Length: 367
Image 1 (cartoon, rainbow, N blue to C red):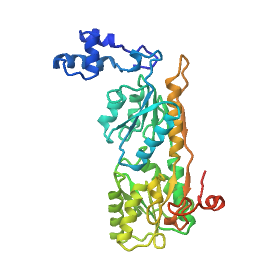
Image 2: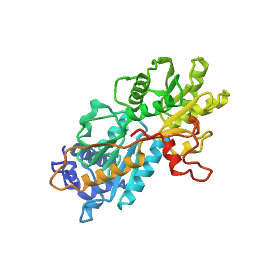
Image 3: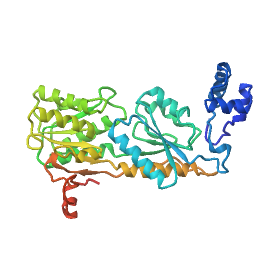
Image 4: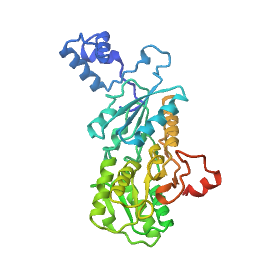
């Protein structure tokens, strides 16, 4: 069903299920005193009609709950935890609350989100899929306001806010080249689907573009798989790289969490950072400022992504008769140079502020 079609009502569900509206309400609110057979009949009718309950539609004149949904792969990854925080703050400034759902990076749960089964009592959804891909673009044609985050699906029927993955990864690699490093390893490549659209593959592309532009030969032995992007996998990939005795003098990890694991493994091996090996991550999570040494990173514009995504979603929620075509917006990015690539931390966690001129010189911006 498309958004411009008439949405099913609770009365429609009651008619199809052969029960009263009160019984439908009891099932939706999980009241216990409903016979299992009746509950199953109501749930089947809800699924068949694609009915999407809305708390405020039953009482408020606006028919809106004042709540939006945010569906992300996992809060264990610092980037998504900090993205959720940024979205909540952006929504609060606009008088809206956020209901956060964790899909666990499973296809089944991502499809359930789009079917409206997991975040039912919201006015619209911000959705960051990890398992759905370009072939699933039709699933985004949903009867509620939706804004897509990330880079798994392009050209769909929804607004899309994402980051400059290729250009930002190229900037990270260029930063390592600019400080004199030539044998640059990467950690975080995806084990399969090397040609599809996902963060890992886009960042490999940016890495290779930077090498080619600098006249550095690409060495596949320096590209290490690590999935998912957790600390332990970053550490394991770095230990394997060291054990293989492949010469390298720098490493670009595809997120900061992998970088934290890699830093640990380098320290265990007695490898000095940045003297022996320089390291840069991606995401500019808060923890990067507190690692030892503090970790250089690419800031992909997380706060800007949150602001733009919330703003676009609220625009869609408040649309009347005229509907704008889908919009795609890319956030700004910058390289933040810290101790792991030989710079004084521009945002030290323990000292007085650095002068603005020094910060500007060391930020290494690649806009």
